[in-house]
Image (tube, each protein chain N blue to C red):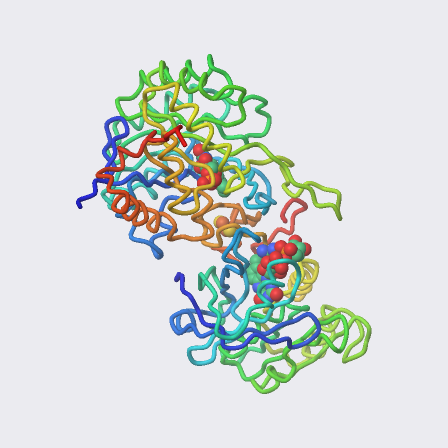
Length: 307
Length: 262
Ligand SMILES: Cc1cc2nc3c(=O)[nH]c(=O)nc-3n(C[C@H](O)[C@H](O)[C@H](O)COP(=O)(O)OP(=O)(O)OC[C@H]3O[C@@H](n4cnc5c(N)ncnc54)[C@H](O)[C@@H]3O)c2cc1C
Ligand SMILES: Cc1cc2nc3c(=O)[nH]c(=O)nc-3n(C[C@H](O)[C@H](O)[C@H](O)COP(=O)(O)O)c2cc1C
Ligand code: FES
């Protein structure tokens, strides 16, 4: 049986639904020794800002039960260096490159970034990171308010013809309201979830394990929360969903697709098993064959309520 | 960088809480340089969640050795592994010691506690005939690798906190003594060090006072070990650098030891 793994997100076609999660895959070079990068459905870069950004002070990560906290704080070399020294490698891979972007301070930066990237052909899509919990001094995230989400997404929409993905935070009261706001502002797809806000304490020192005190929780610990949010969003919006949060292997990837995700992102799992993405691509094929399902698309939202 | 499944040849207690593990890993053994490390998955499950980093302690043909201290959950699980079992290892990682020094220089290797681990492999690779190994430990029963360094032709000196073997006091105090004794010879010296942060900081300041080059191997909590997560950064004079990629070995001139550094 011929299995069709390809899916569409906005204007881009992915040969399979497996992509990388921003910030967990560097700029892909880091994984070149371990896997054939060309097999990935798409690559999402570490978030890039207009100017170089130094991020937070260490300690920046700590291990937690079935997961980890991070407070990297969007360390990145800035747009110019990205274009000059990171993008050429990505371009050569000949797979869709999704560039994650964020603004630090003024939301105008998003517009500036989108305008400048609109002419860069090696970038296939933009992912708006309006959900990073690690920017010190910012009390609320854009993606925690419907109105701010709508405003930001629609202003970027006007500045770019590229496929636009909006990445949402799970630290909200009602995820589907935010997802709807992004949809009506013209986003082509939704990515969720970013990390859940959390903290951890060293009881000997009675000090926080992270220098920034709080950070973002990722890994299997957040999977049930992420899954429920994907399912809820799926029931309320029409645009495709890129699901993530604690996917470690094929079964967990399948859960997200069945709940309503069109594609999935592998994040923290890359740290434990750098081959996770490829193993999942192969695993999805095998599952579809075994279940006699012709295409990955048929899986999306195929959750059956009857027992 | 490779990811392989390596068969355990032996995994035994050597001293106190220290253990010595030998795995068969030809490709890794070939590719490794002194000061580089391995990121080992100690459990197939989620507990502990992340891999654990260990220095390459020695290479023997296609066998690779690590020397480790049972420090917590992960190393306890590692200690429970039996010969014949397989370990999922990523490596060799990071930037190790640069030991292309001239053969006529004096080499001082200085290790505190388990920090001795990467220095044995290093000592095998150093061409210089004039090698001194300073081994620091809490007490006599915890002195590591004395015989091994001797058999590699090192002049071995020991420092214990309680004086039960060798010099009584810190290994850094012993370092000062050795440098003083060496001064009349006028010979050029290079220092290589690994151990607790406070020891390394002291080594760097002694090296600076004596105008001697020093390379030290640092530790930081690691999530990926391959440069992707930006979790293990420290502040250096070149900016933020990743301990797992630009390190773990740094030149003393590049380190700031700033208050917020670790
Ligand atoms: C580059 C590098 C090389 C290393 N080489 C060796 C080696 O050759 N032999 C050896 O015994 N140990 C080595 N370590 C330290 C070793 O990784 C830790 O002792 C180990 O991860 C502890 O795991 P655990 O689950 O047993 O302990 P945990 O329960 O996780 O912690 C026990 C103690 O170890 C500390 N610790 C945990 N992870 C790290 C870490 N990544 N770095 C430093 N301290 C940590 C914790 O803060 C705690 O105090 C190295 C560390 C690094 C970064
Ligand atoms: C170390 C680390 C850094 C991250 N950096 C970013 C980032 O720069 N931009 C972003 O949108 N998400 C970032 N994330 C969030 C992930 O992309 C993902 O949304 C989250 O980790 C949940 O997926 P996971 O459980 O599979 O890791 C980061 C996550 C981790 C663990
Ligand atoms: S541990 Fe991830 S960058 Fe060093």
